[in-house]
Image 1 (cartoon, helix red, strand yellow):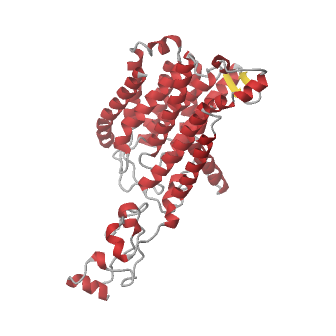
Image 2: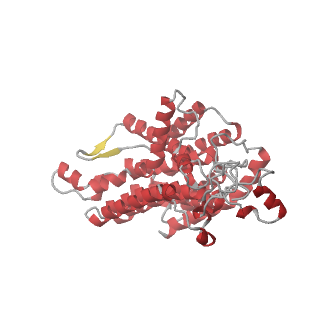
Image 3: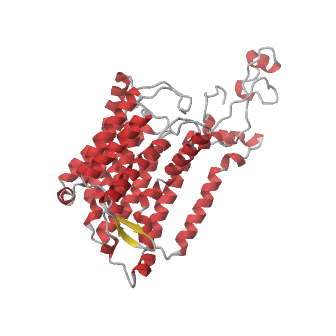
Length: 442
């Protein structure tokens, strides 16, 4: 565990230290595109944050190769080299897209190439756990096709959710943390060496996200861009393929009785083997809904819009930070709930806790619909979002305007009943608007 944590810390430190110089390079090279209609940020922000994240990935693999306990991962398996090769390909494509905005079909082709590079070096699916059947051995072409599909789907799911400051990096960090706990448990408790590469990939992925998040939290100073979102999606998919497709369930020695009975008894073990698919449940749902929505409207599935889940959170009244935290909450609930169920599947308290937290999540999701308004005399003691709205003074001939100019009242004391010439700008948490320009008087 100490060596995994050392690898994680080195990856995070390198990513964090590289992000500052990368930001200056992105500004100097002109990798600061104009604000698009679907964007939430208000000022041009440099991209290419994936360069720093790729540097952290390389540093993490290099350190792990020189550690005594982790060196065996590189000697007994070719998966780390396969990951680095595929990551280099997808990272290069992402850098080109961040700078030159390449076509979506070219990016999709590059994703298939990166997945194929990893598959050709042995990172493929050998076994597939199917409840009611058991561990099914796949043919070479079946395993390769499934691995490529999993890589491409995961990359695009993470890329689709990268729409708010800190959202993609935080959600992937949460997912990787839950995945690390499960993979480490398989490797340490059952002594299955095939789970060691997936554990290493998860530790490095956590470090990459943690190192980049301080620069990417709202208001972001740099974006990871496609060079970063596609990279962390590929690393997450590599861990999924490694632990799901390389670990044979028979090695856990939990079978008892016939094969079907044993399969049902091992259902809590089978479910977390597909954990990487469940921890991207929210990004994957966003991906599917986006494709259906765009196709229904007669648009291309690759046409960008403002219909993603995080955009809808902003539209119903959540602030930028609260929308990100809500997405974090649901990601953590799904990922860690699945891990907890796999460890203590017989405990009813875990199911009840997950249900209770889900209800809490729904309340938080709908909170803007039920935001109370404090009485006048309490407005000085509550956050701005609970105060009655004030409107902006724009008319020069109204009594309110004359009072402001004469100094009788201030902008903040002009009540909504005194001025109705202009629609108020709805304010979010602490007076900051979620979408659109910030009001001067909120």
